Image (tube, rainbow, N blue to C red; front, top):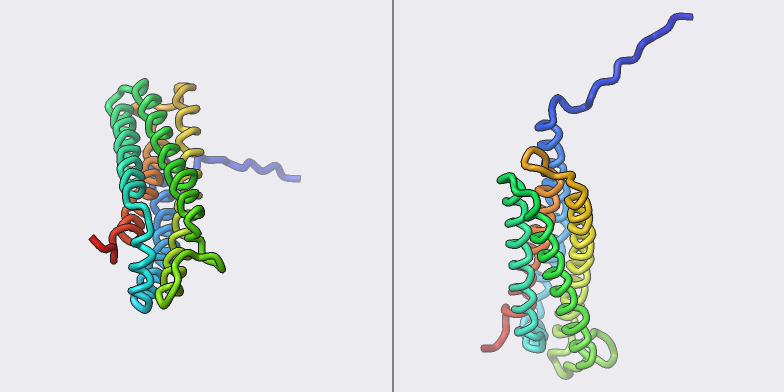
Length: 216
């Protein structure tokens, strides 16, 4: 019986190679998300083209104030998280935790605005598609289709926001243990890419929902 020796080697040539692979993996994941949301946006635009008056009527029933406040909260959240990533890259890890906590709370505020306040307001006004839908007359069908896209898109975006809250919560937990430094902050960068991507999706949704076709 012949003994054999199996050599086990680290799968990355260096820590830098590992970091680059992780970031490339996140970009690949985000590319798949672009395709996912891209189909939704394309379907929205095509359906709006064939039902423009009804979509305009639906847009007129959305709450522009809450939508704008939601947008400002999301953009600020990304800016604060980016500041935390910049602090750790410059060798100031303690600043990461308060920045991530503030970004987390801002994102939670955005979710509250959308689902606890705006959705409840929409439902109370019978804007959910169905037999009791508030819009009547010839624009009813197009307006219902608008709100189908509205509820579907905001629900999907909200699920991605919940995922982001979980990831940033994990970053805070790891940072409290002292896992990150100027030499190692790859997870912070990767989560930051996802965090910003979710905001970019909203920046496309915001005009589709609140601005396009809205009467001044």
